[in-house]
Length: 462
Image (tube, rainbow, N blue to C red; front, side, top):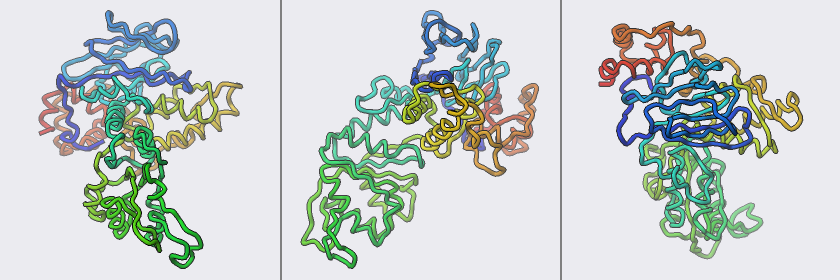
């Protein structure tokens, strides 16, 4: 979470669409049932319904019905008040939880909040209307995503894929960059294979041999000919993973191949033409990297695909969880509510890869405690996520990390007055983290108070 109000400014307009996505049910982890609803009515009530656990929308009454025994007759109401959406608990017997924390009364929802209603997990989003095209009409041949940003990226990739335009994927480690390369290759229709190279694992001394190949006897130790990865990818796609790790001399050699579409084997008689689709990926910002050739960056960045980290696409937690459990052969699984709040509110700095590893480990631990045919996950099966945070560890802005990092805070019994809030913000120079500590609350709650005090919010955003 950024520290200053100016950095946290939120913009609402008629082009902003509010989405409420049913992510998963705690008793049906192995069954992907994700559904997205547009909150067009000014007041929406989430309540208990009949039938299956998947929710149903009643537009005439503005009700979202979910058949879940842990949901109250009228559980929580989502009210549009000016430019914000307020969640109001309706006195539910099991409570409403936002980002793993119980809702006391009401609170302003922020973009990306996770809301637990009964044993169902929902995601609240506020997105530009232009991002809905990928959700409304997902292209065939891609893994479905309910995150508007990812769905729109997939729509654009489907348009780009049939061309020869290079694609540069920018994403954090573990976010699934290789899946983007697979998607581009699959949708391209190219007859060759997809060849992946980890650029960080190729020493400078072996760059030409690895990428361009060599003839037998081309150098000491070349006991047999090697084709090279570029030629292997001829008529197909070459995926350069972590391209930012290439040494500067290697960058120059690679640029030459991109420009002339020819390679020369070490010890070979002359250049060979190649027809390669280039997809590169990096977790670094190459456009600002002084150690990387700008001409190579712009040659690779025909289309830039920015893949959000997992903490920014929590709508897909249900689909990903079901997929990883399926890999393990699990067909029926449940998770306790306390464990679910810890798991799904975690910031996952390792992204999708970390979620997969966490679930695989938990499944192994839970099998001894579960009934035959039903995997039952609970807090003891997530020992790393349940441990108290180490002092100084990064929290990434997620609710669970925030609670762990400030575990000594005793929440206030009442919100501050606008005068009290302005006084504390003046004393801390508008630093939200410091102001929240003085007010005995969390930064996320402080933002909710500010949304209800527009005169204070405007003053400190200037």
